[in-house]
Length: 295
Image: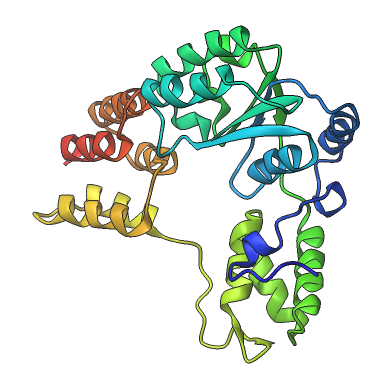
């Protein structure tokens, strides 16, 4: 029985290889690494909810190591690399390995990525690095060349459905197949969103979607509509939408803006915004600067 935990995404995060869904080839390699108690520096990339962070945590939970975890959407600059990563890598340990997990590494600035190249080589004897990211193209080539790259994909809808069934049965929740299938279909392939929404629909040990409106967030469409049907409040409304959704990655919005315009000048503005965001310490400010130019 799992330890009690309010959020099911954490309560049911797999802590063994048997509980990890999909990506069979990667899991075979992971099994060998656990047996050998060592592994190469890794770049795990794929869409949201494909198991990148879970895979990284499986490694540190099954290998004799000390570890440092950094969420690069919050700490993405060279100072974090120098002050935390280098200090950790150079410190003494009684474990076989030290492991640095750089989650959401596509938020790292170019300077931070360049600094990591040297750190990886300098401390290669006892320190391993795991990078996770949604957009592998944002990781500079000299850094990618030092990492074993794995593209992780979502398990099949059937696998996700079966996992939800197992969780609901363990929680003694009554459910109707059709309703559960509707939630899975709506939020697949992001397993995290599927599980969050399943948990949100439970009342008195019963799964019910009555009164629920299951639609994927349309905030991207709202932003596009505000930009191209602009009025005096458009800028503030876009800013509020970004804040309300906690948006940290603006790639989807940039793409939607590009698809919605036929103006060469606007395309140039969008391209500049994408370019500037790569090395920006605050991508929200960079994005809102782009919006102001489009308006």
